[in-house]
Length: 155
Image (cartoon, rainbow, N blue to C red; front, top):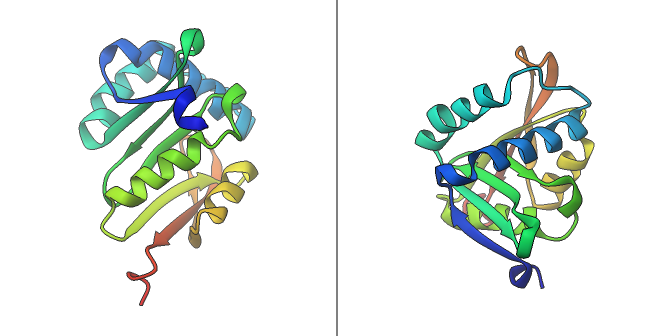
């Protein structure tokens, strides 16, 4: 069902502004923190820091839905995964996590904020286990480090 309602593409600059707006809305809703950075600053961060270090997949909805999710990842780490507030709980995040698992070398790590209970439940449902706790200075929020291991990698 989900695959008919979306198209997954590699990131290009044309998606930047819409992606950043969706990212900010999702982040703010999940954490309760208002992002004080100008939109152009976050777009620069995306294109200068996130894109060069990761494969960035963008999920486009049908029709006028536009950018409904994105994931930045390497074979070792999911560094960003955000789904538009109006498109959560439809299997989009699961599709992206499964793509990251398939591309991995049998292990994946990620961080999420402790206050983001929805993300924590989501990752735990997908087999990620807590391996550490920390504190994100930039946002002044506690974070949790998770790791997933493929069943054959766990032995």
